[in-house]
Image (cartoon, rainbow, N blue to C red):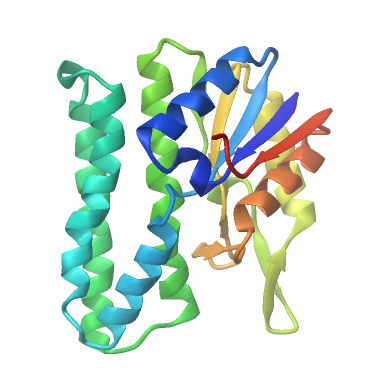
Length: 227
């Protein structure tokens, strides 16, 4: 098994994503593929969270920008007749994000937990859209939320990976999945209380490295750009 990770610049627009798809198609054997958020999305999400927590309602202007970034990818790769499921998913996630931001706006505060929640939308959206794109192209593909595979625990007031539980969960899942391509969003994990947590800047690279270790991958490739 091999693990490939593609960064935000690699999937920043339809042209870049097209090149990534060509790389995926050329590879043989079973692959775990970790994706970052589309280029610029994580920074946009953090900016929205900061604005909302400072009671600046201009965060709402970015919601439309965020939706358009993801719609552009969908409309480029997926025919109109087959867009309904992924468009519904996108809109539901945008609505969910808006609810979280409204809470930050009302409370006029931001916590590490709420920032992790907001930040996690980028990888969830990119990975799910790419999953739908690959299915549309008739590839043998599955998707698994990384928060079901990677777990953290608190050590000296820091959230760090719980390697024992993560290794058990990840190895069991991949051992029983025969899909050729398994997509996993990077950056995201789950803490001891079941809350979404993130692995910090470079967290998607870390996700790929952890999974490669847990599944004893013979190849780990980290792509920052495919231009």
